[in-house]
Length: 40
Image 1 (tube, helix red, strand yellow):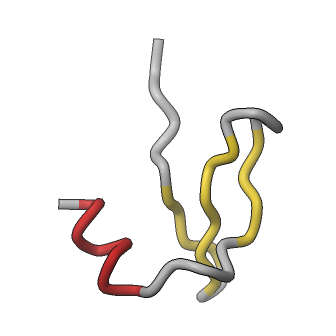
Image 2 (cartoon, helix red, strand yellow):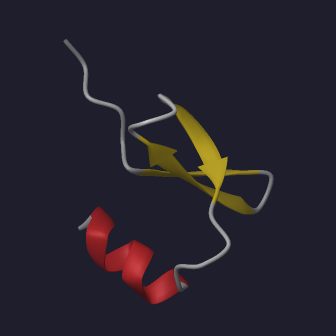
């Protein structure tokens, strides 16, 4: 079973996986540097 990545980028906007909604929601809170650290 494939795990969803926590962040994804679409059309220059970041989306974050919401485990309760089971869908991506637009990420308006996190900073880019936090996202890039999480991706490493």
